[in-house]
Image 1 (cartoon, rainbow, N blue to C red):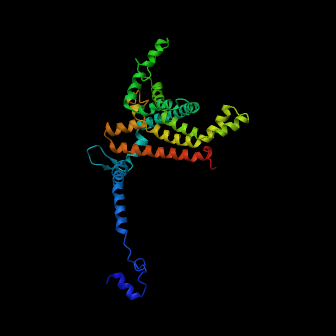
Image 2 (cartoon, rainbow, N blue to C red):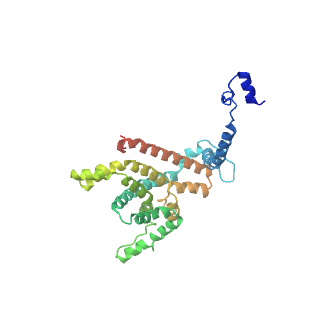
Image 3 (cartoon, rainbow, N blue to C red):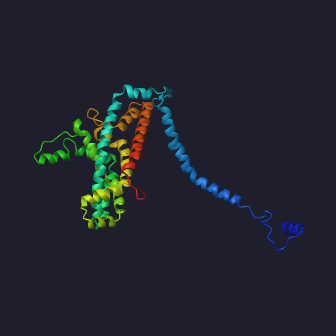
Length: 322
């Protein structure tokens, strides 16, 4: 006699009554569910392991190194806040690189955003071949951060470069753009502004989401294009502007390749960007502990600037639900 017949005989229930659900005889599906979870964990494991080994561990280890005197190949020697004390009190190059970086980001980021918005507004009016124009204008952002473009830029503004060649043809005086401390930094600013493609595409997407009925209604009321720009376009674009400002500010403070390849921080350290100075401390002077401290100071500065931008956004960013 099987288990079901025995239970029916003892309980007196009808033989056609389903007893599996009542007496817990239903097949247990937990092993199959555990197997599915295990497969999911296996697929997640490369990401989790990579995050721990390639992201979290280097971040925490660099924080530890920032409190040590460590040269590559040696043993870290704990010195507490010694690197930070030296940085703020005795390192003139730290303050020089900080000044150069703030000037670079403060001029290059607005230049890129203004030019990107201007081009996006023009493209928003174009109907034919807009995809081709978008691709051509986006190309500088794809290749702009490469070493090859930086070398081209150095040749372009060199003493025998194309810029001075054009000036000579026009009968104008030439200039040592990369050798003059007053103009060298501006060559890097122009290079950063030239790479406006990514910001332009984001602005263009934001412009396409503004309803045309707003412009039509304002035109009926007699609004001119300049009034439409300041009363409709800019307020509706403020969330996109906020995103671009944050991303470009972070990128501006982390600039390295232009200063390293185009000017190498010269002349007279007038183009010594902060990341270039940190690179020198780490891989030229082998002061890894001090370089780690420099990196954490920059992280704190970027975090403070980002927090300030977010805090100020409540006064100038307009959302549709508000």
